[in-house]
Length: 160
Length: 200
Image (cartoon, rainbow over all chains, first blue to last red; front, side):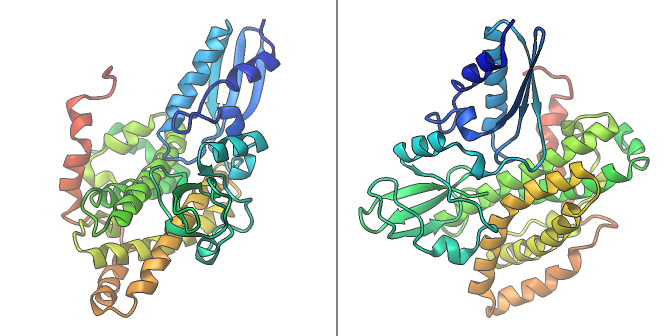
């Protein structure tokens, strides 16, 4: 019989299909793992509801659990329990190393003044002299910014 | 004739509410996606494509919740009803190839949607309140985008006229405009050629 610990370790190897440097565990989308005999129940919270990676993550988690010899049951929880604050410190560091600025901590929700301010750090050179280019980017979870110091455009993970 | 799913809807007040919102988000998502590739500039091409993707994602989550109440699936609710069975507002149905009218709709819709989400977040029904709160996190960015454009265009006569023209449609849900049926044809063509149960 598999243990919850083994399941967590296996899920830590399931990458986000769109940002493969980070795993589903780093992203904080695995809310609960429950082992009942041969059956492994995983409660999974979507990040952005329109994200096409969700189906892939779900299938890959089921596949990894099946490889452990258990019967997977991945439940999608449509509540408000996920926010970008659930991304782990390791996950944030992996994002930064891959050139994505990690999300800022969530406060009251975004404002234009805040997004247009210079509180966002360039993941390449560390400068805060960055500007908002577009609230929207190549996937629902990202905005586009530009670093005026190293002249590098970069993607900012949206805070939600 | 009403589809089998719809005959059950009237027994489920919650499903009825969810369907109206889901239909708004699905149809608006389709209309917004019409700017993909042809928006006035690249940033807006990206923005409207992303907003469309979010709205259709919200529609899917809302249909899934309604589908549980009705014993059906999100796909059946989204794509197997007749055009007259959709409950969306007339505002979202229109094909708006003019930028100022698109922005006017965006601003009016986001205002109305924000009020609706606030009400749903306060609901005693924890599933509805939770999903509304989740949707609202994403909608916050749509509102910022809409506000930014409103600031930019608010003194432009064509934009002001578009707001006046479209405002009465926000809450109009008794019937449909002539523009819904052709959109429905387009939106459901694959589904109708490969009905439920098709294995891809």
